[in-house]
Image 1 (spheres, helix red, strand yellow):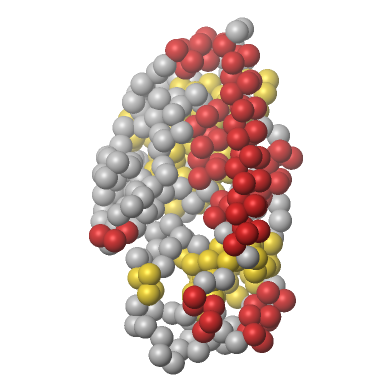
Image 2 (spheres, helix red, strand yellow):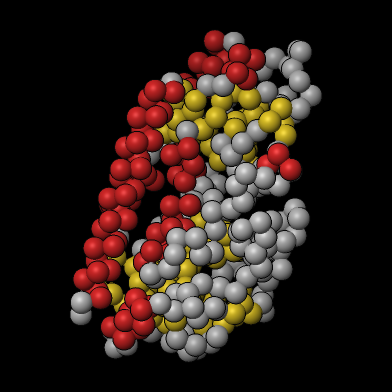
Length: 334
């Protein structure tokens, strides 16, 4: 009834869509860094999209299954296997008792999300099972996973789960999944759209031009709180700047040495650096998959273009989900 963590990897924790609407009380939103991959994994195993998934970062965990279950992995490019199967991204598999999932190639991967049929037994707080590392609550004991941890599965199976167990009894995998090419619309480009904010006024035109003309690289100082990028320093003006300003997921702050910091899911609710802009929401999932050494090219866009792009992104995402639903319905007819 559980999974056992034989190797915890670099940083593995349970996440869902996070805790929205509590930042005014000092509660960080948290949640999956790549919410698209999180939702794809859940949909492939016929879960509700709000079920928590196991988010693994850069060096993935090695996991043993103590009973049969359905799994799907979504996220960056990777190679994985069990004793008997090669495991591909964005596809549904049936694990057997004693199977050990191990990753053999993750050098180009930011994060991978594991969903199991029915979900995991986790601690809920403020309507979310996401792990809040600051408050040490939610997820699995409010912390990242360690070697030897055993996490129970809920086994909360619906009719689709039961049918999938039956269908995959011999093959142990579906003959369909999501092709990587279908996801290239979201993940391939290194261009990151930035929307100007009031804080942009703290930078002169030359600094803004340099920010968009030059290329930046993700450094080793990147985690769930924020991502430091290296490149041409950005000059900001600190005179008359408030001591503290509200920030959000995607806010780009600039340190006194000119280093940009992109705030991510576990950011603090207030910031003390000038803010050059905010990353468009539809590029945050792409950002969540950028590993150390990845290149970024920032581009300012106006609100109107951002809104139009968001509509296109949502339409593309809905088409993707409709495709999964169509194949799932065909699976139910077998």
